[in-house]
Image 1 (cartoon, rainbow, N blue to C red):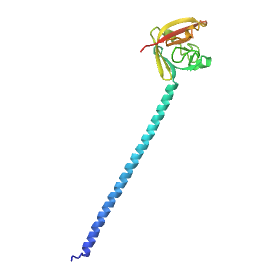
Image 2 (cartoon, rainbow, N blue to C red; image 1 turned 180 degrees about the vertical axis):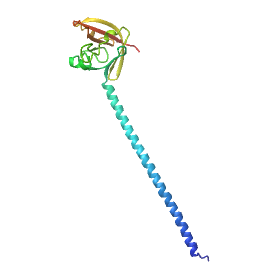
Image 3 (cartoon, rainbow, N blue to C red; image 1 turned 120 degrees about the vertical axis):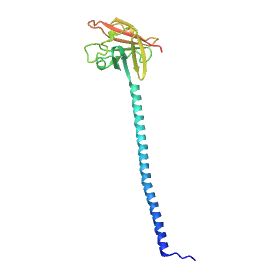
Length: 193
């Protein structure tokens, strides 16, 4: 029979202990690396969720802004202004006013604004418009382009230009300088696509 010497047993024990020590070191080192990667990955995932949530909130905010958007834009005279329901002095101080009895989308849309002497004179350059010029109207994200077809001076008692129409048109009304009994009236018809 073969007998193991104490040196052999001690050497074997030392060798096994070294192997166990090295393996434990590898396990601990891999555990730290795994933990760091996991926390990085988890952090990345949380960050992505936060970014997605913020993006969704931004989209919802933009959608609400679009739904609430109501403005008039006329590039030729560098005009872009918000519209508000009504034509009272208070409304027209800060907005283009919408004649309440006219349409907001299809039909005849009637708008009014000051052209001089007030805080905001949105229609100050309206007299520069000519037939063929473009007018853009945005109501809750629906944008329509109109082409100027009429530029007339009317009596301040003439409401015929605000009557509803079969076609889609826009009517812009403002005062005439130094002639209080008259109004400037610009009409545009919706452009065909």
